[in-house]
Image (cartoon, rainbow, N blue to C red; front, top):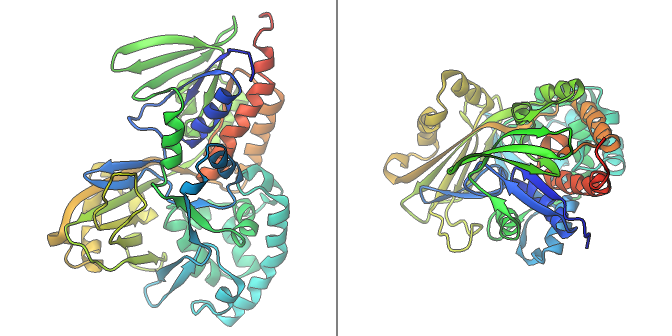
Length: 455
């Protein structure tokens, strides 16, 4: 146990901040986490809204999330993990035909796929060398490890190597449904960071909901919810000053170091004294907005459905799920039969332009009525979700920017350090790996300088 009693503040109680805080606490540091929300977990939480258990962001985990599952084992929570299986399927529609989708497809599955022509199937073999490179050369939780492939857009890469058909009928709905992304917003490096690992992975979650891990971590740490960190500033005398705001008003505290674990697009609003290089980097960070609606139903016995839609489909939703009895919820909660609908990126952009973020459901009720004709009589409650910043985007060139930023943070660490999905990957495993990595960096750098005389 480290005898150094440095005081460290972590800003943000998502999986990145909680992971960093846990490792630093275990190393002997005094750590306090501040978060503006009234629940821990950030975008990896289960939030009960109008009797419906909603996901605050993430809905699945991947088995290749090594740092996360190492943490789960260290916490003694491995028995709480459950797998959907590698052959977990969704039904997809392009407006003219329906066919199955898998996030982790097998070779036989793709060769027999009815939505893809013979030419596309033959060209899929061209991906094999890159699948091998991906598996050997990249960490699927750390995007900067794929920077050598950061020279092309995803659209250009897939259409060049395989076909436009494969992009539009298979890959595009996988990005538009859970991520709310358009393929043209993504670089080749993102594809390369994942495809060699997805083929051997399976999808997982926790038996008590996706937010089980963050709830457990928060219960073992000093987390101050409902607290907004308005300003963070490194001071010449040594240490960092934070200006906080909560129900009791404003106050200022001094700590030895700060871990900033908030969305990258908000950093410049909070951290004072950024260098020009840091400002340029954070100005390049982009997140996409997102919107989701849950409907709690009065009846039981509805048929489970998992329908996804391509861009060519006329649907206003990219994903339409009906679940009769969802058991993967926090202990003690009874989930009603539920409809979950993810809005398409085009409609999300329209809502943002029109300022309709507080009435998301009104934009899709007519579409839901088509898919579930009795919705008006059967709906008992509604939960709307809107994210101004849902997931970080990885356009061509951004993985290289991240690699440069991380190298600078590693070689010239300050008392304000950064972690999160925008520095790792657009999934919870990446955010967790980033948080644990920053804890290691802080221990070997800032921690060593804690008692050095000020200049």
